[in-house]
Amino acid sequence: MATQQNPVQYGKAIQFQLESIVTPVPVYAAFNRNFATQPKFITWMLRNVHQDVYTGQNQNNKGIDRPVFQISIFTQVIEEGFTISNQILQSLHGYSGLFGGVTNGFYISKADVQWLYNSYDNSDKLAQVFLDCTLDIPT
Amino acid sequence: MPLPAKVLPGFSASLYAQTGATPTPLTVAQLSTLGNVSAIAISGNQMLVEAIPAFGQDDAVANFMVAGSRQSDKIPTQSAPTSMTITAAWNPSDSVVLQVRADAYNGTVDRTYVVSATDGTGTVYYAFNARVGQFQIDAQPGAEAKAVFTLHPRGNQYGWSNTA
Figure (cartoon, one colour):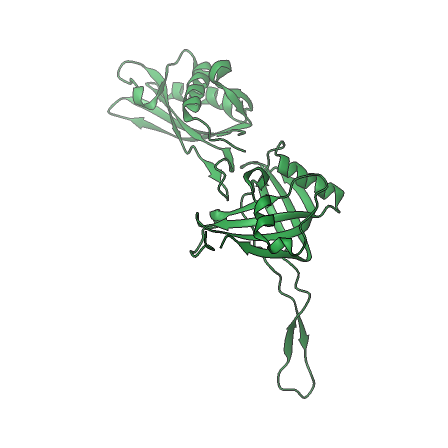
């Protein structure tokens, strides 16, 4: 029996966990980013929430969830972005245990972080680093 | 409640197992009797498996060749019900998977299993008596851990029925 997990919990847990890693750098869900006023900040986007569905008429015949969230790091100084990305890598990559704090967190079997690429946005004068993090969540 | 008269998706198939540590499997006649088979195919008995593998009857023939004869001949022989190797997402507390594990450990428990397929109106059932010949946990990272087991049906002990 595997019930469908709630993406609201995922969002709360991701927000908490990222904040705890990079504090005092502000962390936002993607819709709330405020790049005009801060020299460095992080946004995240959740995607690929999906549990495989299996045969028969039982709705709970499903597999585990392996959602991915993208972490976008924005900094005015390129090196700071790389430094923050290293903080996240050191803290999250290969991590297993409670994810997202006591209140809204849940146990994850593994977090798998992939450092995707860095970039620079000339119009905003912001350097960027993008990472993907895959979570394996027992259900 | 007719026999399904549509092409069915694979998702329409479910697998059920008789309950109890020492079950009394259905007789050959009962395996083709709707009332007996549908009593096993209830939600509490469902095995939450990923997919239903090929089920039915194996191919087996004897080849006869006679010197001087123009054609040889093939005679069906000893064609057993098909063994089913099944994969289920592994929940260590799943009572049906625990029962299969116990059967594999015992090795001699005969149990009736039922495959049902439905178009939402009618249902066709394939029932068979089998022993469990394999039980493995495949815990590869990258997906959920799997419980893999093989049901070996006993010879001649299967039947088809439907809700028509």
